[in-house]
Length: 141
Image (cartoon, rainbow, N blue to C red; front, side, top):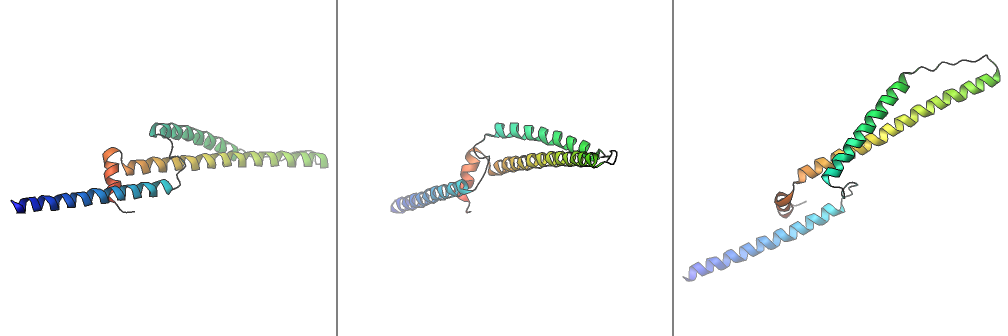
């Protein structure tokens, strides 16, 4: 009888240590996760998917615009006078600026799209519900 109660006491102490250690580790891992910079942390998965679709649409639009602008040939014309040469230079410069602006818009939207994809992949790997709690309580980062 004494041996049985001794085993129970030891089991309760061991269980208490496991629960206390798991709780401590969970809190530590939550703080580590909060310290990581994540731009889209405050968004829900549904909001992130909506944002991803919107940026994907923008990327496709800018990609098509850039392809159209890049394949357009610029012909230099004019009658050879200095005034026409200056006007033609300004026109060609304007076309070049427009191409660079389109490329910049495409690049910014592509970077945002990739960041949203990374956030969604990270959330998927973290798990949800009890699986996430168990992972945070049992892993050391």
